[in-house]
Length: 428
Image (cartoon, rainbow, N blue to C red; front, side, top):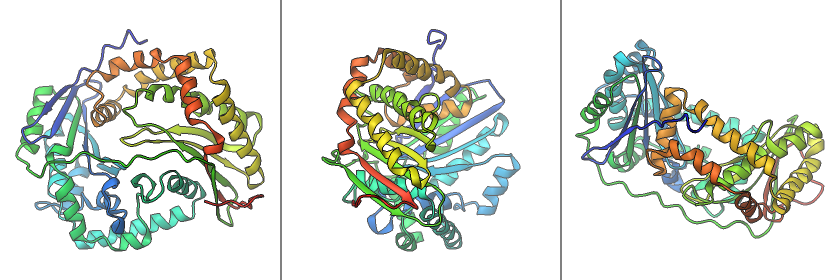
């Protein structure tokens, strides 16, 4: 399977203003996917205006210096294009897919939205109302509350990974047009932008069109994101978020781990796959959901980032089963730390991870996302070619070493949200 993969071999060009253009011709369909990534994520939200970046994603396409919100919507709708705008802790992202014939016109519109938004006050108020509604819905959702509270435990003392990305009802009220414009002017700049173009368009044309749209744009030099280091908690931290009137309790249980640049990254990916990703949820799903029938869902997720990312175990259970489910999670975590993974699990996980690559890269959107991620973390243009070998090269000893290093129930952060009465006193 790996030998059949000849590589995406995209072209990467840095424009004179620092903007990066990555282009890959693909004739699978007569369409083109474009993604823009800007290093202007919620990491940069000021404490008193948490949620600023999230609100920015809602109003960015609601008018530019030359187009009204209606004109933008009409241009996109007329071509059957949906523009998606989102943000993570580090990256503000825009993505859309259009017919190859519409490529240049849609790219010009995309550039206008990125570079020249005007944030009309009426649009800000409308979108602020939507964000407030979304925050209130989150506060009534045990799964969201469990995860938000877990991140506050794992990343305390105002760490940017522990803050609410959407903000709070109080901080969202304080965000005005001036704050949005200042944030945009300081952080949405050429040297923090990467454009990926994948589809039925010749590479020289794609690069020339991108240069025409973004090449004359200017702005201050982008600073690299700096994330405060975080240490894994020395002892177990547990807290409950009581929520009445719910039929299900949601468990979020986790550890801080490593950065994306850590050499142990692929070993942790394999460990997490065995623990709670592979097939119906790895060991966790097999034990808690399949064998014991206790959970509506059970899985783990690993998200390495610029800073030390989390490994999070999630489970949704009947309130009567919370303590049993937590005991089972503790047991699976402790067993993996002490006994490690088996050779069979290693082989199955490698097969699964390497085998999933062609599926991940079978669409223009999948390729664009992969290339944007590789650019974001500096993984290189040939990362897709190297990745199978990097996974295959991980040894069982390396996986067992990271399991011993990170999986300790005595140092876990544990949150239960829902109609749950703890049998012992829980505290943060």
